[in-house]
Image (cartoon, rainbow, N blue to C red; front, side, top):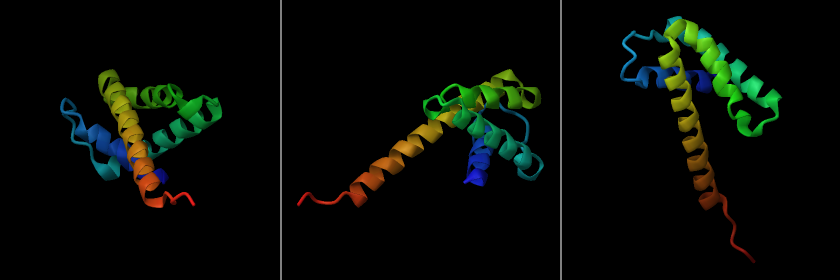
Length: 103
C-alpha cells in the first residue's frame, strides 16, 4: 500500500504539464515514498477527518524545497483529488458487487 501511494505521487508529479524536469523513478522514488508516508501518518495523528489539510501541508513542505512551490502545491492537490475519486469509485463498485438482497 505504501509503495502504491509513493507511486501515485510520482505519477502526479509526472502528470503536471508545466513540470519540465525529467523525474527519474529510481532517483526519486525513495524520497517520494518517505514524503507520502510521513504525510499519511501525520494525517492519522491529526484526528481530522481524512487528514484534510494536514497531509497536504506536510507534502507541500517536504516537496517545495525540491520541486518549487507551484509544482509541490499542484502535485499535492492533484494527488488529493485522485485519491478521493479512486476511493469513491472503489466504494461504489464494491457497493454494487457485494450488496446482498434484502430477505
